[in-house]
Image (cartoon, rainbow, N blue to C red; front, top):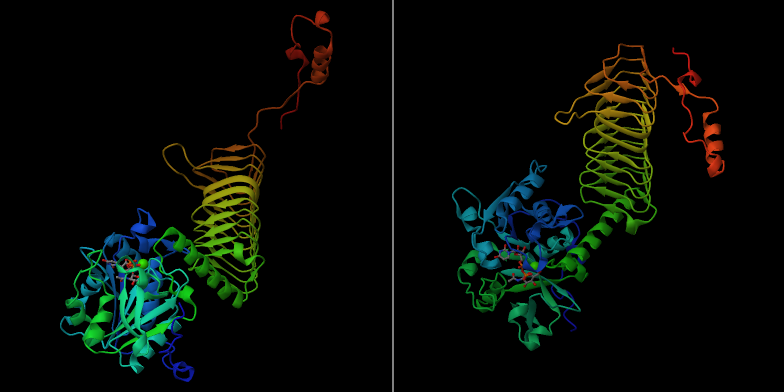
Length: 521
Ligand code: UD1
Ligand code: CA
């Protein structure tokens, strides 16, 4: 269908500089997030499904917070406590924004019913009643702030009772369709839901995005009149459009230039589509900020991540959660970093997994390093292949280059941890700490039986099991004395190679008198 091309859009000179930033006076925002999300086939409420590591509903909430001046309300219902908690956590201490109010919709009787639940918040004593309401679905994560501002502007210039956002889709199935009247300049008459649409209406390709601006004096009186006369027996918010038309009040519509922006996420397929689009935007943003990505499509960056200039990300890198990466870092392929702070000039080689750890400037990690929560790698330190660390502080310039387990350890500056070193931090019941002073040398294959302290400057000989505290500047060695038997191996070979019949009955003699002991130290 060839629909109207933004026929109610505003000339660009009116949009530029017109409230392109900050809260819009007289505006309250309502986000609907109570729905079950049946089509998602998930145990988790739909609005909590993550997109680029952030719950879907937070995209609507954060967008709303950028424009709301009076109040920001989220309607919760299905898994109300969890949804409310996620929103509270994400918006706590939200730099100067309005606090978010949470309202519960006890029975899920439709989007109109959801919005109606917010009325007590606005009609209570003391508050200023909003001039306009912006109402957002909790499942349209690709919506842009500029679009919202344009919608608000059109609403005001048209003196509309309701202004809706629409999009032209090739496949409009599942969405509410915008029914227009061709005989009267294509004005909007009503929105018909997919399930209620007749065969002709189903052919309409202009859809309702689920983003509305409603006149303050109109909203609740219109909601009061809603009737659940439809297939789903729900109170549809979308019916306020027809109500406005019937009352002879103007209805405006803004058509999206890019229909993808109006994606409503109901299914797993749509969730994957949204993820793709959000992640691409995130990558563009960081590339514009000076981050180099060798293969952008395979580079996964969550919404809450920040990255410094001239940092290079190789293919198949995943940066998750609230990770911060400094400038001039290199992150090689196959590495996943979650909720970490990484300083400047850090080199991270291939196939590392880091969580909730702090990596200071100039350090080198990987390949194949595993940092579990609460590891601090101090300036210029090195952690190499097949090293696992947990709750460990590795001091400035210290090195653990190969095959080690460092758990519950406090390691000083300039320490060398030899290959195969293990902090034995768990006795089956309790965890205990290992403390290693500055400039200690730990030889290869050392076990440190915690709790234990190794004093600064000490040397632990390879293969030692350290069970007692070590004073500063000591040597510790614990080994069985070596046994060497010259010629033993050659004799054994000769025996094994000799013909069956000539073999002696007994195996190689291991007479004590033939043992040559190394001089003990
Ligand atoms: C809705 C619109 C449809 C539009 C589509 C755009 C209605 C009746 N239909 O349909 O015209 O094309 O969005 O994506 O509004 N919710 C509640 N309480 C409820 C029901 C839903 O809070 O009782 C919330 C949901 O959590 C969701 C939003 O409202 O965030 C939309 O609900 P959903 O069921 O996804 O509506 P659609 O069928 O997609
Ligand atoms: Ca939807």
